[in-house]
Length: 381
Image 1 (cartoon, rainbow, N blue to C red):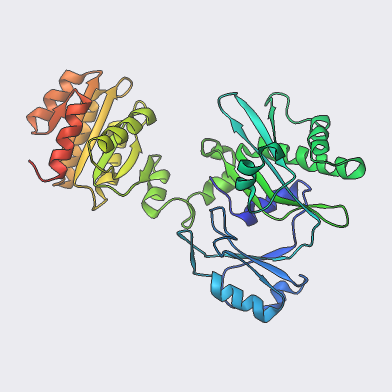
Image 2 (tube, one colour; image 1 turned 120 degrees about the vertical axis):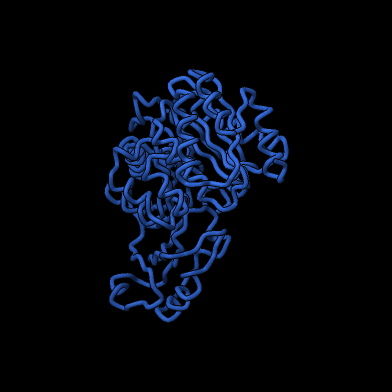
């Protein structure tokens, strides 16, 4: 789950990391009272869940209240990088002497965290990593040991800091790692993390992604994950509330499978043979008849779906339960969308018998089922 910048900065503040003073605005009418405690000039920042906002025109600067109001008119409701701006963060514009980059993410191959830092932060950090790879510091961090103050100081020293500034910077790094552990974070970035003339380090921008699988430990953000305006559409939010792993795509072949790997393989083979998947839907293991019926109804809500391809490798999920669920859905909803089934595994013979008796195309070969689904999607019955 991606957090908006203002949400990320709330967390940073709670851990003693400095951020610019600011207010969140969601309408064009700027009340002078709302910004009376802020000092001009302002940075007026669209709150959208994409990077590269400044280059895309999503961050503007103002030197007066009237100019700030014009910035709000420009940004609110605008479409920036395919995202509609619904909220804007108005912050004091900070003067600085140096921009740094600092981030922590997960290296799954090494089963560890990795710290990434650079003395050349800012909007061109991606290009910096290409043009000046020697300016990028990468350091693995054992999740069982965490990021110690001494290691944090070594990172700061490599960035060119000594004395009090080094200790202050190391504290920022250690606190940031504590946030990663406390919030089950997959990625956290401070870019830029700036040094001011007074020797303070301030996070001008921050990006946080929380592991979706850990949201049950963070009820506030789990609740927010269902809000419109985040990464999920309305039907995806509805599916998530129902406990389904569903992602809308732009094709015409509906896909249901049990197991993320199998569903991804199904998407791949459909694409390989020239089809376009309409969605990703993973039932998981041991899905009940009720869950399968619910999943089918979600996919069939999509008016773009011309055929539904159900691909089941039965282990915990019994093939006869799948067959009963498919027939129940067809009967109950009087669906006219063709259903193609690939069925293999526990109780597959019983499942195949049920489907054949109800005139549903069923295969034990994934390739044959895929080809048939594509034929049907093109009107070949």
